[in-house]
Length: 201
View 1 (cartoon, rainbow, N blue to C red):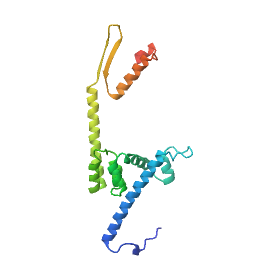
View 2 (view 1 turned 120 degrees about the horizontal axis):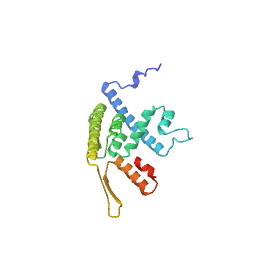
View 3 (view 1 turned 90 degrees about the horizontal axis):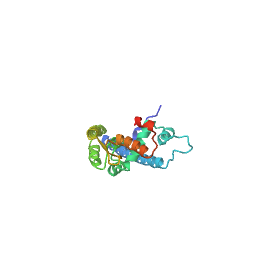
View 4 (view 1 turned 135 degrees about the horizontal axis):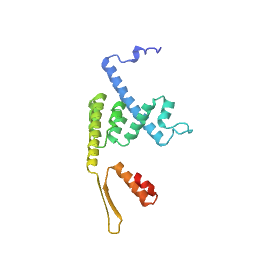
């Protein structure tokens, strides 16, 4: 059983006690920032690959620091994203925002929207930030769905034989379908396709 801290180490008035808590919270935020930056550099240098038995940085953090693998993977993701987001990076380094808020913001942050997200983070709670991030994610998914539908509607394929019997092909296809078509055509052009394989294309 942990012994209680002696009462004399605490400030006497409640305002001073509250101030000390918020000051320490800022210091913890700054320490978390440094922790993540160290992780990012350690991962970049593959420091976790010491003897060939450790699979990745998340596995190493789980082994050496006792961090759950899922939480470790998330810390690595956030650490990598910080390099791309200078405003969030600076605010986190200064201890102005918590890891919880930074973790949420880095799911959707870009150089265009990070100032907006930081405003929410500075004046709102972690729950407010999560709510805004979910809305960003919803809009992003909607835009992606709309883009997929538009690409499907704009699919085109035209082909004809010219005067010497050669085929001329033109296509406008979504990325995955286009890649499959290009690979099939390259296989034909390179002469790697046997006649019996043509029916399977």
